[in-house]
Image (cartoon, rainbow, N blue to C red):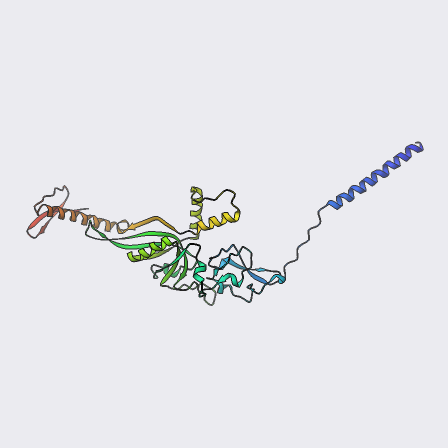
Length: 334
């Protein structure tokens, strides 16, 4: 091999080695840096909202929890673990909206007995109305602030057909939020932290102005009873309303606006859709006796119209009834 070709071969080899080193350096610089674990927070635990708490929310045990917080960001208004008792905050009302994961401050909660407490608990445009209850009509005391109830009216009405009375019950309002029992929104805790169930005489409910008028009238008509609703009922009814198109969410609505619309629909009291039952629907014996009374009343009216001499034709068994000097055949109603 001549000297010229050897020089060219060595030059090509040097260029190849240089290119390889350059490519290696370039790929090494572009590779992702190794992940470094973030240091665990070392600050105290502060009380935060486990979920979004709109203004007017009645605080429950599952709404709050402690979370580690950087010590340099801790403020005097925060509730610290070991220095505050969450049980003492149950039944308080959120004065200002608190987002999920945001620390709860002392100024964001209104305690029972504070001025403006009930006004803070009410939603925009809503009213508070108080109804009397007993252990029998108040779910034996198992109703607490923040629960949702239906309102049932039980009354006795005149039954003109049988010249007597008839008992009946109807659900007049649905999905009412309980604001307070008696004059307290505290549920009460025993030494072991368990909820104490106690009897109460009045319950304060959140209603619209129109529904407040209906409740006031219903109290004069008969006895009002509370029916506790399941937590899952509201979500099921919301899903049904969305499927039927009863809830209008505008196009282009932000997630916050959509959440606000759905939350408002979820907490809305409902009138109408009344269901009712009478004593005749509950008791077959009562229904049979009612029919007998109606038949006898009809025969008596017929005899009175005929001056006591009317004759009623009946193919079934009859009994002879004498009223003074007048005697008539009365059919036996089965």
